Length: 505
Ligand SMILES: *[C@@H]1O[C@H](CO)[C@@H](O)[C@H](O)[C@H]1NC(C)=O
Image (tube, rainbow, N blue to C red; front, side, top):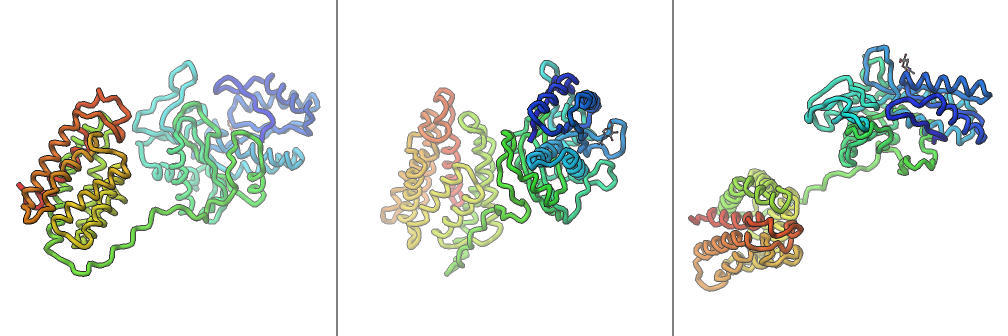
């Protein structure tokens, strides 16, 4: 791409002497000509201009192109448009032309045209600081600033924090505003190259979210994204922010853009059109369960009542479970269970509950698998899937005891925990044990259930004395765990809610 880059002090244009030395080095190495690619800042224009004059006097064939791709300022101002990330595309195109052996005037002509057909706009979530000094400007934690320069100069407007989609819409509207003097003229039907550039401190995850927003928005406007690239191309130290560059492309520009380069920082991604690619879609919804052969309205009413109790219990425990989880995990156990409760409530309000218990558990396991997430979502889902099996042809009390055992067995098998490991299995196993009398003749179901609920609560309470043997809590020292395990507390609360939903008091 580039034969040389000349560094000045941080955020300062390099001295003329350094630039002349670089031009001479390239010329001595046999270059047919030298093209200076300069970003439109006064200091750079002056120093590079002076160096160019000096090198020409010494007989070197030198040209200069000044890049001004900044779309920040909508009305003409003295300072003019700055050169920012779009400059990297010019490096790429000029480098490819030089590799193809094009003459200096020809290269100058092509890159000048390409440079006139692109625009860049940055948005920042934080300032940057020159090593040894403080931040270049102040920005509150919930603010973002649009249109700032790569040297930490303040931008053109400030907004409250918003979603990636919203920010990207503001950016692209601003960049393509027909009333703006510095717009990039992109319309429906145009083909473009898109650069999503990290200004320094953004995580890869955030950058990709912004890239996704930008691709979707441009496509919605009928713009054909021929190439898209993301990475750290032109940064402002540690500034957390992103810039978008849009360059209108032609077949010639694409060919140059696709040209191989050995530049280490240029991403080696397949050069394929983005628009029109098959994209990932969210998982297709599970095929609906077949209609109930013999709907039983009374049973369904019981299910609705029991599940309603479970949801309310989990929602009321949200804060407490999060709090317990903060000691050992990431503090989201309550939120995860609340998410499950909301998903079940939505499902209940949809009104399509199967009346067969085995199908009820299967459907419930699907709801949790899709909506609950986390390890607990997978474990509950496993439990319910396995528990559904013994209930397939039999819904007598012994079958429910067998269902509980099957669920616990599956959790142990796949989750790798045993009772005593300080997990929800402690509550479930205690309850499962207490449910064994269901297998006997003429049993008192509610009395047995009540004892299972008490056993589960006691077992959950007992986890406070246990050392974590599985799950996230096992990664931390036992000394910091003096409260019960949130998963065990949640499982005990669910059993209690089931019992209450069935009329237990
Ligand atoms: C560069 O900025 C100056 C003002 O500093 C402006 O007059 C000029 O038009 C800009 N150059 C380009 C190529 O836009």
